[in-house]
Image 1 (cartoon, rainbow, N blue to C red):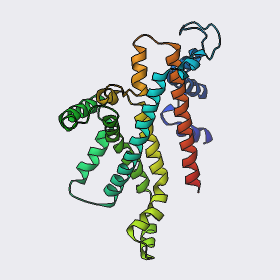
Image 2: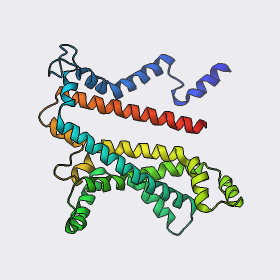
Image 3: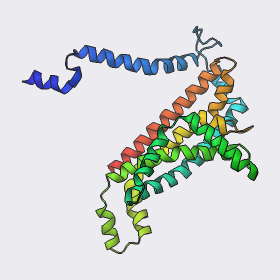
Image 4: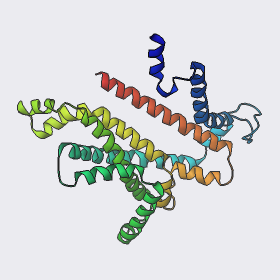
Length: 276
């Protein structure tokens, strides 16, 4: 009976031995992370070779920190990411509240449009935004640059924030809001003192997702950026045209570590909020 129960818990993998499942899991992780491990490994190589290990060195990280063009691209990515995240988080949260608290004609179409935006090919979004900016913004005197990059990033990250916050709202007990209003709280007081603290983990998760998507985006940014407004992914693309150098490996390693720290910090913060 015990053996039958254990096998049924594995589902379609019930016929495989435990070492087979372990081997398959190890293979999946190797497939996912072996290229990244190779990139990090050769970022510490003492020569420019990205194929033969000749010794340990921090030389390429030193060159990375002394390159003003890379530092400027990093500042541009940070500025765009923070600005787009703040705007997208506010609009996405309000959109999630409007869609989850109201019933109106055409709501199914509105819901589908939000989800469809998350799976739409980036090249289509990039081309459509470029055509829109050329037709509307440039005649108004607004050239392609950081402003158009921020608007584009806000446009494609709002849907992700809306979906995450809406998932949080679906599990929220609305009787708490009703109790606050019965005790005399206004709608604004109820939102800031009851609703927002309860959905804050979802809002922060959406903001973290929006910042990560904005900071790493290349395709859409490539279409809507102007002269002198290169973000970090665009800078890496321009550098890689001349070959993969250890500086690119070092830069990719720094971005990877920063992203991991951001995700870890956000997860810890969300866990602390959930616990409180």
